[in-house]
Image (cartoon, rainbow, N blue to C red; front, side, top):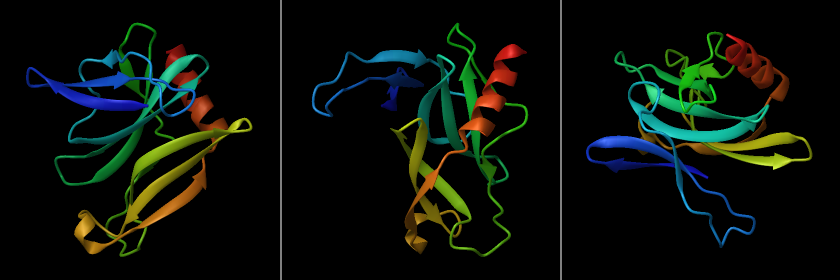
Length: 149
Protein backbone atom coordinates (compact mmCIF):
# COMPACT_ATOMS: atom_id res chain seq x y z
CA UNK A 1 0.00 0.00 0.00
CA UNK A 2 1.29 3.44 -0.90
CA UNK A 3 0.06 6.45 1.04
CA UNK A 4 1.05 9.98 1.99
CA UNK A 5 1.65 11.75 5.27
CA UNK A 6 2.44 15.36 5.97
CA UNK A 7 5.45 15.84 8.22
CA UNK A 8 6.84 19.27 9.08
CA UNK A 9 4.75 20.76 6.28
CA UNK A 10 6.21 18.32 3.71
CA UNK A 11 4.25 15.62 1.88
CA UNK A 12 5.96 12.25 2.08
CA UNK A 13 5.05 9.05 0.21
CA UNK A 14 5.36 5.87 2.25
CA UNK A 15 4.91 2.17 1.59
CA UNK A 16 3.84 -0.76 3.73
CA UNK A 17 3.06 -4.38 2.82
CA UNK A 18 0.76 -7.12 4.10
CA UNK A 19 0.20 -10.73 3.13
CA UNK A 20 -3.19 -10.98 4.81
CA UNK A 21 -4.62 -7.44 4.97
CA UNK A 22 -4.44 -7.44 8.77
CA UNK A 23 -0.76 -7.46 9.69
CA UNK A 24 1.37 -4.73 8.10
CA UNK A 25 5.12 -4.20 7.81
CA UNK A 26 6.80 -1.14 9.25
CA UNK A 27 6.30 1.83 6.94
CA UNK A 28 9.19 3.02 4.84
CA UNK A 29 9.56 6.37 3.13
CA UNK A 30 10.03 6.01 -0.60
CA UNK A 31 9.67 9.66 -1.67
CA UNK A 32 10.26 12.70 0.49
CA UNK A 33 9.15 15.10 -2.25
CA UNK A 34 6.26 13.77 -4.34
CA UNK A 35 6.49 14.21 -8.09
CA UNK A 36 4.06 16.45 -9.92
CA UNK A 37 2.03 19.47 -8.94
CA UNK A 38 -1.40 19.55 -7.38
CA UNK A 39 -0.79 16.02 -6.10
CA UNK A 40 -4.07 14.19 -5.46
CA UNK A 41 -3.93 10.37 -5.34
CA UNK A 42 -1.37 7.68 -6.07
CA UNK A 43 -0.98 3.99 -6.66
CA UNK A 44 2.14 1.93 -7.02
CA UNK A 45 3.43 -1.22 -8.61
CA UNK A 46 6.73 -2.94 -9.24
CA UNK A 47 8.09 -2.99 -12.79
CA UNK A 48 11.37 -4.80 -13.37
CA UNK A 49 12.18 -4.59 -9.62
CA UNK A 50 11.64 -0.80 -9.58
CA UNK A 51 8.85 0.93 -7.71
CA UNK A 52 6.68 2.87 -10.14
CA UNK A 53 3.92 5.24 -9.14
CA UNK A 54 0.78 6.33 -10.93
CA UNK A 55 0.48 9.90 -9.65
CA UNK A 56 -2.80 11.65 -10.22
CA UNK A 57 -2.84 15.42 -10.01
CA UNK A 58 -4.39 18.62 -11.28
CA UNK A 59 -2.25 21.12 -13.17
CA UNK A 60 -2.25 24.90 -12.62
CA UNK A 61 -4.65 25.22 -15.56
CA UNK A 62 -7.00 22.74 -13.78
CA UNK A 63 -6.22 19.99 -16.25
CA UNK A 64 -6.41 16.53 -14.73
CA UNK A 65 -3.60 14.07 -15.38
CA UNK A 66 -2.26 10.70 -14.30
CA UNK A 67 1.44 10.16 -14.95
CA UNK A 68 3.87 7.26 -14.54
CA UNK A 69 6.93 7.95 -12.35
CA UNK A 70 9.62 5.35 -11.67
CA UNK A 71 12.36 5.13 -9.06
CA UNK A 72 15.85 5.46 -10.48
CA UNK A 73 17.20 3.21 -7.71
CA UNK A 74 18.22 6.10 -5.46
CA UNK A 75 14.78 7.26 -4.29
CA UNK A 76 14.49 9.76 -7.13
CA UNK A 77 11.31 9.39 -9.14
CA UNK A 78 11.24 10.69 -12.69
CA UNK A 79 8.27 10.92 -15.06
CA UNK A 80 7.92 8.90 -18.22
CA UNK A 81 8.51 11.18 -21.22
CA UNK A 82 5.87 9.37 -23.26
CA UNK A 83 3.14 9.14 -20.67
CA UNK A 84 1.50 5.70 -21.00
CA UNK A 85 -1.47 6.56 -18.83
CA UNK A 86 -3.95 9.33 -19.50
CA UNK A 87 -4.69 13.00 -19.42
CA UNK A 88 -8.34 13.97 -19.16
CA UNK A 89 -10.29 15.34 -22.04
CA UNK A 90 -12.43 17.61 -19.91
CA UNK A 91 -13.90 19.42 -22.91
CA UNK A 92 -15.92 16.26 -23.57
CA UNK A 93 -18.98 15.86 -21.40
CA UNK A 94 -18.55 12.12 -20.77
CA UNK A 95 -19.22 10.27 -17.54
CA UNK A 96 -15.64 8.94 -17.49
CA UNK A 97 -13.63 12.05 -18.26
CA UNK A 98 -11.62 11.99 -15.03
CA UNK A 99 -10.20 8.77 -13.59
CA UNK A 100 -8.64 8.68 -10.14
CA UNK A 101 -8.13 6.69 -6.96
CA UNK A 102 -6.49 3.69 -8.60
CA UNK A 103 -6.42 0.43 -6.65
CA UNK A 104 -4.18 -2.16 -8.33
CA UNK A 105 -4.55 -5.90 -7.77
CA UNK A 106 -2.08 -8.42 -9.23
CA UNK A 107 -3.92 -11.29 -10.89
CA UNK A 108 -2.12 -14.13 -12.73
CA UNK A 109 0.63 -12.01 -14.28
CA UNK A 110 -1.51 -8.94 -14.96
CA UNK A 111 -2.87 -6.06 -12.93
CA UNK A 112 -6.57 -5.39 -12.50
CA UNK A 113 -7.33 -1.79 -11.59
CA UNK A 114 -10.40 -0.42 -9.85
CA UNK A 115 -10.83 3.32 -10.03
CA UNK A 116 -13.34 6.14 -9.76
CA UNK A 117 -14.61 8.04 -12.77
CA UNK A 118 -16.24 11.48 -12.89
CA UNK A 119 -17.58 13.66 -15.69
CA UNK A 120 -15.52 16.65 -14.47
CA UNK A 121 -13.69 17.85 -11.36
CA UNK A 122 -15.78 17.54 -8.25
CA UNK A 123 -17.25 14.41 -6.69
CA UNK A 124 -20.47 16.26 -5.94
CA UNK A 125 -21.52 15.64 -9.56
CA UNK A 126 -21.58 11.86 -9.03
CA UNK A 127 -19.43 9.13 -10.48
CA UNK A 128 -18.88 5.43 -10.89
CA UNK A 129 -16.36 2.75 -9.96
CA UNK A 130 -14.79 0.98 -12.94
CA UNK A 131 -12.78 -2.25 -13.31
CA UNK A 132 -10.10 -2.31 -16.00
CA UNK A 133 -6.97 -4.24 -16.88
CA UNK A 134 -3.64 -2.41 -17.13
CA UNK A 135 -1.73 -2.73 -20.37
CA UNK A 136 1.45 -4.03 -18.76
CA UNK A 137 3.39 -4.10 -22.06
CA UNK A 138 2.83 -0.37 -22.45
CA UNK A 139 3.71 0.36 -18.82
CA UNK A 140 6.79 -1.88 -18.84
CA UNK A 141 8.10 -0.39 -22.10
CA UNK A 142 7.60 3.15 -20.79
CA UNK A 143 9.22 2.28 -17.47
CA UNK A 144 12.19 0.46 -19.02
CA UNK A 145 12.78 3.32 -21.49
CA UNK A 146 12.64 5.71 -18.57
CA UNK A 147 15.03 3.66 -16.47
CA UNK A 148 17.52 3.31 -19.36
CA UNK A 149 17.85 7.08 -19.78
